[in-house]
Length: 437
Image (cartoon, rainbow, N blue to C red; front, top):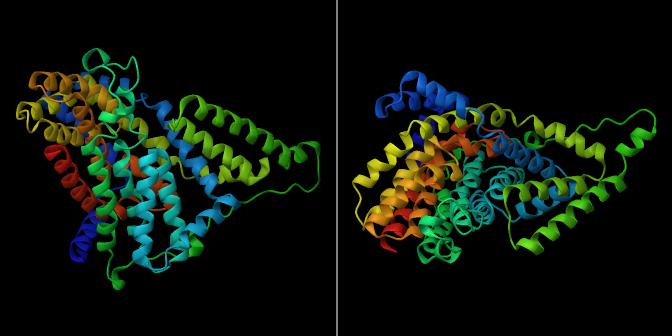
């Protein structure tokens, strides 16, 4: 395994470009595939790309906030102490790898945004305590936990079809989470991944001579707070703890009311609000909070620039019918026994070009549900097959890794060599769960 991971890392280091170059090349690939596999002409594909380019603006802003707010919260004195205490549980490189993987899996199962940020922050804190652990593998282990998100409590597809008036209610009705998130096959997949991914990550630990460590001092992210030379009414408000606590109280009351009314509804907006409110409270004063925000915003550039290009790719995939062509190809070779397996593989391929659970469901559901009806197979399992395909290839798709990489200060090529093996393992486990259960 050490030989294989060394080879994989060398391969990624040499050939995997910056995520912006990756998305630019992916744009050209989808453009050419659209010309070759659909009826769209060159101008049609350009129009599809341009029409879709701004389709993820709201989501892009959500991701910027989850990154910035998570970064701000992590730099607060209270949260730093908490993470530091948890990180102290790791006494060796092996235990550090296992601990960060387990925490990331649990956090991602609860909510994907929560897991994505907390995993990276925790990995960074552990690296300060265990200085001889491979930092690349540590961050890759934190990201590896993200593979379980669509089978967890925050899965967008199972939650969507469990909600009244969802777009496909006339076909499949309202599907309770007992048939999706808490179904036997899904719990089997989650349980096996929970056990095997930490062990796989531990197994991939490089030899001491190949270990890439990081200076703990470089992981510190000091906040530069400008102190005014003289006090003014404005500066007193900027240093007012009372103002921060009042805004914090407003947020806490809203959050408590939200959970009382809606149960454990931990969507991305709520996660962002939790991070922001805790950041405001834990930093104490508006001045320190704003200094932390200014420091955190520097890490958001990749998301701001690259996500519109992914939206353009999604526009070409959906409007040209290319996503439907891929889905139809897998349906054509399926039968009632292999359908869910091939639906999973098809979703994995489509996710590479449409890295959005909700967007992918909108594209693939009409085709897959129609095929499920004709073959007489379970609608709920069909939805979860697409959900798992969406989560699966995230392991080699830089789109979702960007926030974690920004927090950790690494590049995609630093972790993807390890993530390839998580992709292989999770693909086998998910296939077994969907086919045999």
